[in-house]
Length: 196
Image (cartoon, rainbow, N blue to C red):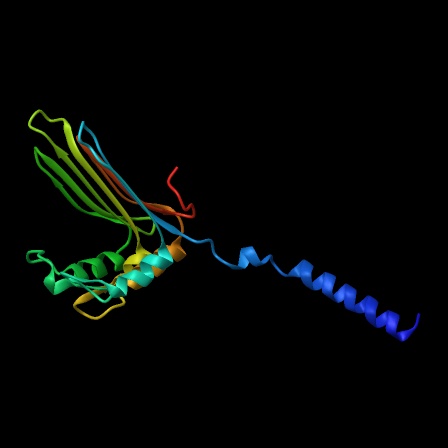
């Protein structure tokens, strides 16, 4: 075999071997994540709202919002009307604790549960009517990776942009579900651009 032929055969083998060991480009790029919000109101005058936004668009929009406690992609905790609760200290305490049910408040009309389980912050609220039937049910499930990102801001704020980035990296799943007698709200993240 002449030298040129040996070099070209080795080159083809090197390329073939290199491509075989290189993962496909699609596997190297994480899928686009979408934030979905649905609001379904029941009744004759009920409205239906559907929101589908790529998380990278949400991340780009947040720094442009200056409304109430939201300023430039950060949520100012001092401007929230949460009476006598240090939200930041509460989140940090739960983040550093082992999985557990931290708060359970039960009354004739309402049950509230705050827990940490499997890497998630869970908040469940069940409200009952006068007859004891379920009037409203709220389920919130936030990955602690998102909580950590939110806490990466200054002392008096939560970093919403960092939270969205962490949410995109975390993967798919339900975040908030609210079921009431006359409406249903659902917020979740997945890789689909539309709601099916």
